[in-house]
Image (cartoon, rainbow, N blue to C red; front, side):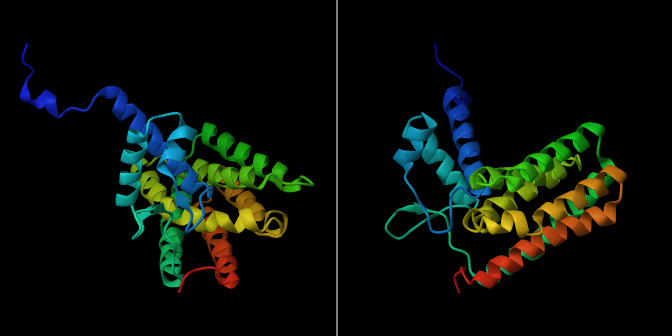
Length: 232
């Protein structure tokens, strides 16, 4: 039996599902700082780790290149883009504004379940920071978990989507701060700022929540800039 012409344009459902899963996993690696600026990504290696064929990974990488979260080098290697100082400053200004707004909206719109999720993420990161031998990759992941628990409490899917796009670009740089500088976990301002933000959201104090997230972002950015690790 002949199929309607439109159906010939539809990809098999299992391929779409695998492609979405591959995209989500790779995007999470970028946002969590598990991939560093300049690091190359092997399509075959990624496919083996994810337990899929190379085609879903290729599709996911194409989407991430379109998102400018990955780039194709002149030798056709896929890598995490390097970021210049000017680009990082610009990205930091945008993040401070948008993520600060999301924190303020969280203070206005949060539910009890949101406050519990934020507190749980804060406590988990605090526990890691107090360990004699902190699990730095775990700390990086928990930092992201805390931030997105805050942003999701704003109950604005569009706002969360915008922030995820920002973190695709910022994650490899901002989380390299924690991954390569373990003393920052215990002595940096993140733990203090997270506590301030959690308290402000719980009490409905929008401006303090905004200021806390802005200070967290700015403090990490200033440290990264002081290290002179960015291009240009």
